Amino acid sequence: MSVVFEILRPLIEFITSFISSVGYIGIFFLMVLESAMIPIPSEIIMPFSGFLVSAGKFGPILVVLAGSLGNLVGSILTYYFGLKVGRSFIIRYGKYIFFKKEHLEFTERLFQNYGDKISFVGRLLPVIRTYVSLPAGIGKTNFTKFVFYTLVGSLIWNSVLTYAGMQLGNNWKNIDKYSIYLDIATICIFIGFSIWLILKFKKSRKKQIS
Image (tube, rainbow, N blue to C red; front, side, top):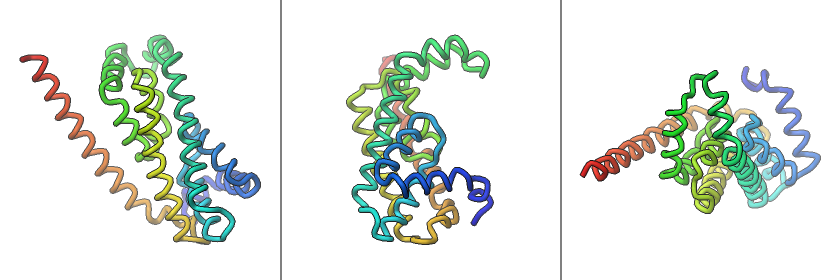
């Protein structure tokens, strides 16, 4: 077991015990928390659930659905928190983390225009996926599109992690050895989306000038 897994051992033991005891509802609940800005890693939840699929205890489709619907519910809760509370909270306390009103206004414009697509890409990026729904709510991203793209992104992410756990079986904890591939994919997605976003900005500014 890697150093990271040793450090996270108490959390891992809680997650595995909870899922083993509660089943699909446990997966759903933990993934709700993961998408509601509580750092419970899906990189543990879903591979372990995939291992239980390989052991014949769970069905793969139900595992992916439980995880993805949990992500969706948690994301909606975070979205509404950002929508109702986020702006006033940041205006009041953002200065303590060097987040100015201009930054807030930029974030609002960004998510008003591209929030649905950012939400989709964010679901495919470790760490970012836990928090991306907050600025989506602050920026008043179209809710229907937000729900659709969040669900699609979650289905992709959870399918990959569940499949990895199924393939690794008893060795599911060794998934961190393959994290380099996930990191490479993450970097490629981030760079590609950033380039697309920059081009969109330049195009919209040209239209405004003309």
